[in-house]
Image (cartoon, rainbow, N blue to C red; front, top):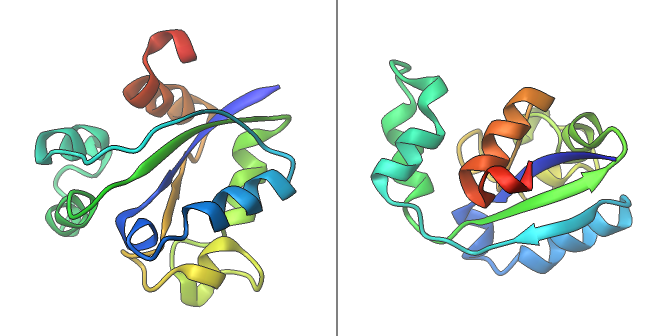
Length: 136
């Protein structure tokens, strides 16, 4: 059993799509091991997205991620990272495969409704950020 992180972003929480996303995850046989609802501060968002430091979209991403509540989830499943990335689809909803979460509910490349860890190493870091080192 491996672990990964998914965040339901502000564009989805404001449209009351939390249940929809959780339903999709459960149908795909993910276990929600922990879940929270938080409103990130600017400092927290910048720390979480530090990997993008110096990129032209960082300020816009931070503003978006602090614009409303987000729902981070600790998910468990065999092959969790890869399976979740397949379920959510490409970062740009216009390029996401039909039937993926981003295809269904994403609005654009920034407001794409969900974030998912892209590797086991990043999953461990991101899970620790929201749920503490004991969750890893």
